[in-house]
Length: 258
Image (cartoon, rainbow, N blue to C red):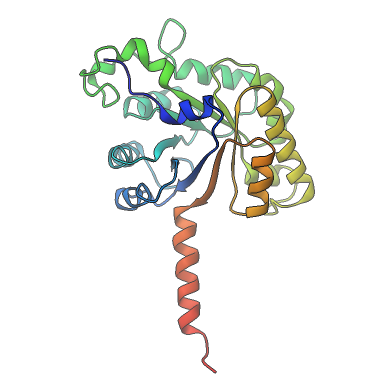
């Protein structure tokens, strides 16, 4: 029996645009809820949410019954972390702060079994291989792993061509908040210079045959990104959805009555 088919990777390879949402609440109950809402993919965030290996594993477990594909964003591109997340059952990994081709090249090795890569061969013990029930996991897993890297700095943009030339990178996500800050526009993602840099990068990624990605909660920016070639598009975050809806509800009923 081979490794499970990665539906997210398949959709990107087919040129389909898929829509997702960030999971930052670090909770299985809310992750399960979000898995019922119809998003194509959901990011379990290990960088800016209070997640660890066990909480990420638990969210992978509850999302297994969902039609939403789980993407795990690791806090940093470290080999040992990526190894653990893959063994926990993640098939799609998003790595932040990738600034050069050397980093990208090592990340490809991190998600690939020997002799081509450095991933540890202990799959018989892992959830990824259904605890040894997927007998062919070692020979079929590489093809189903999807590696997404985040380019979110001026240095990363300068090295984008080199990063795109690395075989094994399936998609490149442009991180708008960090990029805006690095460009001297902290908190102003919609600044004209930032928007120009984002859209130009998305077009370059698409032209190189990789899948471009973005997170945007501003509809006009989202539309522009799709028109520039973005194919994995996150349009919200669970924490923001809850916070904004709760704030609006409180304001509605606490507002002075005429």
